[in-house]
Length: 126
Image (cartoon, rainbow, N blue to C red):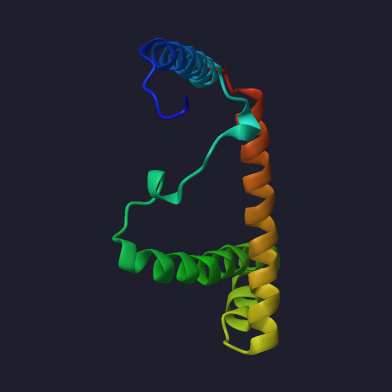
């Protein structure tokens, strides 16, 4: 009996499978149309910085090192004055470099956290 072809059974199976497929499609459409929350968004670096793929890692690493150092150097220069701050902390002694980098990193981290909090409060679901 299993070797015989039954067109009614095949049609019933096909109809049942089509109903399953249609219900899955409806669920997917509902998920796509549901607005996403602020913390469920995907963030891609390519949306903010356009660079060739071969240069992305080099530029990001150099920005990670130089940007906090420059912000820390500017902050220390403003707080200590030009002669004391800039001349002392612009020397490339490792301990002074790390202190300056840490100050800049903390300032940039605080600014980034404040920007994220501001974005969370002004976020509107689409």
